[in-house]
Structure formats: structure tokens, C-alpha cells
Length: 548
Image 1 (spheres, one colour):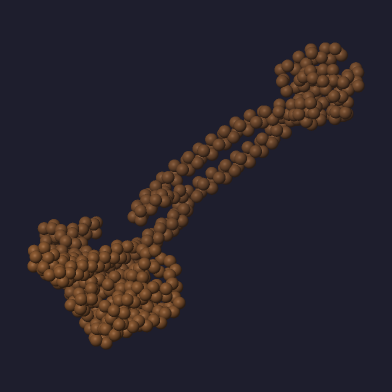
Image 2 (tube, rainbow, N blue to C red; image 1 turned 180 degrees about the horizontal axis):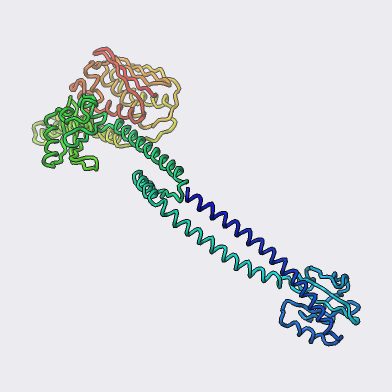
């Protein structure tokens, strides 16, 4: 309240002084103007008495002490005979207002010098004597007064503000100190301060808003963290002083527990696996960080156990894990692939070496026997070559990220593929029936041709003599049906694996590599197609490729 009174008093005092100051300027201006007009009349009287018709210079010298005073001698016909300001030629002055109104003071702008002046003139002995005074003569003194008064006024105001500031600072310093502590609590950079007590509610509201915003940010960050922990496919557990302080959805799912049953409890309530418990114990008591792979419920998990330091933890341990079952299975598939590839290549190579050794050593001497051996060598070499070609094709499919897509007429591709296999089908007296619609879609020409070739080739290889093949094409799917040896239900889930054969003996006789359907599967995956198989042993097999 005291502060408000001081401010109000200071404002009133300042307004009063300002009004007095402005009023004094106007009063002084009027007084100086009246004084100057009187002086101007006196100057005219002196000039008339001193002028004898030819002593203009002497008369002008009488007024040398006043640089703002102008003396002009004008002839009876209006010609300027003398002017103390300049010797330039002037126009006729008879129509000048002061000449028309002799003895009266006239205020106007000089047409010769373009500045405001006060004029007065009189007619004496055939001459007009005119005296003029610059208006700046009057205003200069006022300006000096204004400058001095303004300096005093500003100084007074500055002194008042300084005193006010000192007093205010002493009053609000403890409050500002409290405000600063509150800002530090919420990490605010607004540097809020008050100058008067009246500002305190406003600042308090601002701090309250910042507190609310900070609480909102914390809630949002908490929700974001919980959302990330909930959706991440990696399991995460944080233990502090043997207590579970953080556990996400994947971890609860793996260990088959409820959140409320393990949170803030000993980690043994969450983790029952003895190997994992030992690893955590080693990390807690011996600072031993390690990575281990464990099999849990038939799946493989890669665990990382390490120390975790944070302001909100005493003895933190972080356990993260990732389901690597697919990776493990891929390693097994790769291992089996190399084993099978070695075996598949070894068999024809062994046959080739055996036949060559018999020919070279002379065991086979008969031309027919040598010819038969050579044919078998050629057959095995072709088979080995086909295996290598299929392996390269499969490898290329696995590592190729994108296919070159274009509009392809599927009917033409199927018809051309069937023509290439007509002789092979005729050798087994197999009849191929077609029901092909005009279908054009965006796909990879080479890969689709490879897909059709493998399906037709398999339909011929594993068909019976005098069998049938039916090929159907619609906008939705491609279907290849054969009346061959068929595939048992237990084998249908594995026929797309590399080198897997339903009947290895028949596959070798027919020249099969065991990679054709694996290639079909990879092409379908790359093109986002779906492949389905239906089969009954010794009756039929039907492969369907769905385009959508």
C-alpha cells in the first residue's frame, strides 16, 4: 500500500510540474513577443531620427549589436535603396503589408529571405523607413528556457524513479528470491520478477501455469515411455536393490506373470529361470555383465544383463532380451542348406569320378560299356549343373531387394512356357489342358516366367505316364493341376524347403534338384503372392498362386 502511495504521489507531482512548466513556456513566449514588439517600435523611432536621407550605413551601424534586426530604406515609388541583410536587387515594396499599414506591426514570412519576421514601417521626408526583427530572436530565448527546464524536469523524474526503484527493490527482494526458487524447481527460464506487490498475483498465476505445463509434460513423457515399453518387441526389466522397478509387456508375457504381482518385489517373483537368476546375482554382487542365450518354452532368447546407473536407482541392473528363434532357425536352415548342397553335389561328382576311373583304368573296355558310362557321366554333370543353376537362382532371389516391374501379359508367358515343355510332356505321353484368360498385371517378367516354369516342370517330372496336367489362369490366380504321385499331408509343410524331396529316388531319376519349389516360394514372397498346395497321394497335386 505504501508503495502504491509513493508511486501515485510521484505521478501527481510530475504532472503538476509538467503543467506549470508548459504554462510558464507559453507565458514567457507571450511576454517576450510583446517586449520584442515594443523594442521594434523603439528601433523604428531611432532609425527615423537618425536617417537624414543619405546616411543609411551609419543608421544600420547603430543596430550592429542585434544580428536579428533588419533596416530597409525604400524610395517613395517602392524601390529598395538599402537593406542591412543583403545588397541583392529587390522587387517593388509598395504592396508590402507593412507599407500599406504604416505604424502597425505586421507578422509575416519574408518573400526575400523565406523566414518569419515582425515588420513595422514609417514615411519620413520622402522615404519609407522599415525595421524588421527575426521571429527566431524571440524563440531562441524560449528554446534556451525549454532546454534548461527539460533537463531539470528529466533529472527530477530520474531521481524520483531511482528513489522509487530503491524502495521497491528493498520491498520485493525477498519475494523475488522465493519466485526464483520456484522457477528453479520447474527449470523455467522466464526469469520472472515483480516490481510491485500488485504484480504478485500475475506472477503467481504464471508460475502456476508453468507448474501445470510441467506436470502435463511429465505425464506425456510417462505415457510416451509406457507406450514405447508396451509396444517394443524387446523385453526389458530394471532391478534396483533386487526389486523390480520397471518391467514391460514382453517381459510379463515371457515370464507369465501379472504386473501387480512383481512390481516393487524381489526379482525372483518375476524370473524363475535358475540360469538367469544366477546371471543377475553375479551382476548385482560381482558387477559381472554378460550375454546369454536361453531356451524357454521351445523358443530361443538372447539376454543382456548389465549394470544400470541413474539418479533414481541405488544398485540398478538392466535385463533386456530379444526373441532370436527365427535367427536360430535360420542358422539351422543355412547349416542344413550347406550340408544338403554338399551332399547333392557330392553324389553326381562321385558318380562322374567313378565312371571316369573305370574308363581310365581299363575296367570298361567294351565300346558299348564306355558309351553307357559316358552317357551317365553327362547325365550326372547336367544334374550337377542344374543344381548349381538353381542354387544361384535361389541365392539371387534372397539377396535381391526389388524386382523390375512392368505390365506383363500372363497368358502369353504361360503359353510360351508350356510350348517349351511340350516335348518333355510328350515323352511321357502327358496331355496338357489349358483354360487361360487374358490377364495383364504389373509384375516381374523374368521371375513370373521362372515361377511358371518350375510349376510346369514339376507337374511333368512327378506325373505318371499317360497322365494329365491342367493349367488355369484368371485375374485372381494361376492353378497347375497334375495327376502325379501326390504329396502326403506331413510332407506338404516341408516341400518348400531347400533340397527337400518327397521321394528322393524318383527325384534323382527325374533329374529333380529339390530347389524348384523353394524358388517358387521366394518369388511369391518377393511379389506378395500367396501359394497354396492341395494333394492326395497317388491321385493328384494342385498348386495355386494367388496374385492378391
